[in-house]
Length: 102
Image (cartoon, rainbow, N blue to C red; front, side, top):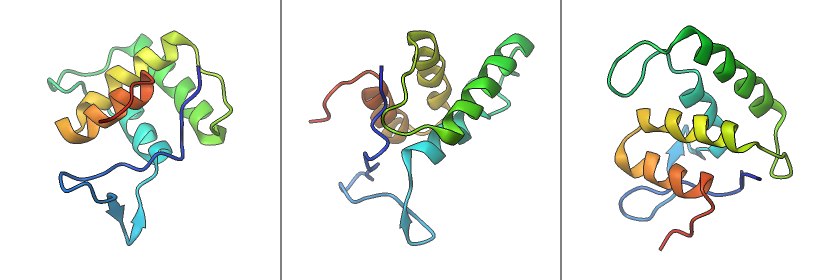
């Protein structure tokens, strides 16, 4: 499976999300999510999952839109992005599951 890193996240008005006057990249948001120390419920990430998350982080650093991702990696990324608001996590969920945003 592939991830479209060219996709732009949008705010509630449909405008591209910016950080320091530049579009926020999918790769940056995914790296931040996968490195989170706690679940959305505030529970610590289990040790065995931390190792898997770090492996995915290393893969993300050099990834591009042609990088192949396993279903397990996608599932862990999809779980990790839930640390964000509904608007951002929803967009990332659609992207990671090859769903088309309306």
